[in-house]
Image 1 (tube, rainbow, N blue to C red):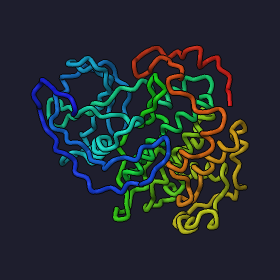
Image 2 (tube, one colour):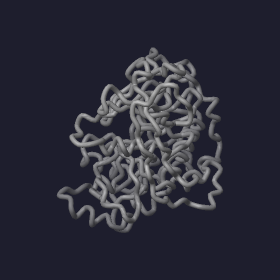
Image 3 (tube, helix red, strand yellow):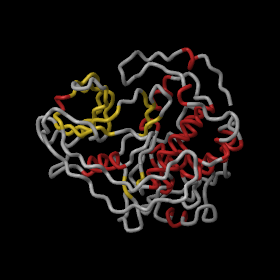
Image 4 (cartoon, rainbow, N blue to C red):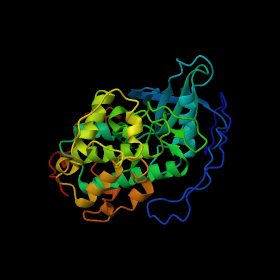
Length: 373
């Protein structure tokens, strides 16, 4: 794993073989380095999880429990994710294999870094050792009195789009982008995490399940049952995240799929075949109908956002997946070049970390600031 270990290996995992992945060429964007041929490095050996001291529990998700831990050999603080294998009767669960595979392959400054795989007392206890990141955006915004400044939102968005652009260049869809899966350290750097639903895509791929992406961030084509979806579903999620960063509240907090669709239509207008070719075919399989809402009320929801900001949000929240802006296109959007310019990540305020188990009282820098656009 790039550093020598004095302890003996307790298990081994072979390398993950990948087929050639098409890469976009002639990329001149300042924020993305065109990735080299992507290969997942081999995991030569695994250490025992006993080499780590668990410090506190951070969170539990659908695919595992995450702890803050200390490497007994180096003293390094890491995040230790225990994979949930109890529901798997035969072999290693597909979701866990995918997460390990994608994280090993997608090396990027804004994607959480995997350090190694650790094994417990038996082969059914498997852990992913990852870099520790102090915060997640969801918890952070819940404790903030005011939203992020526009300069900070631009920095966060640029980092997120850069990470997703790399994934899409590697033909990977994340399929679960949301604020709780975006981590941020005390240097203003975000780290995209939780790749349990990530999947390779391509023309030869079998139909995919539409039951992906947390409901609030789920693209309309998924809500209507589309199985031949594309990387565009990630961009819809980013549009929802953008809106949440601006208003410090979820954009479409539905409790059911029907309510979710209705909230989307109410804000963006009810689509039709002209706006979204294929919409009527998707709706023909549904037994419910919706009101005819006037198209696009997004300006009234975001009165302080600039015209360029509204344009970017609208392009991310475009109904037709074929017309939805791509990550690389979004990185070049004029919104990021107008005043206020993106803030240097090192200039972000720092605050206590929930993941560290510290008291959740934010510094006065966040409590007393006025919104600046």
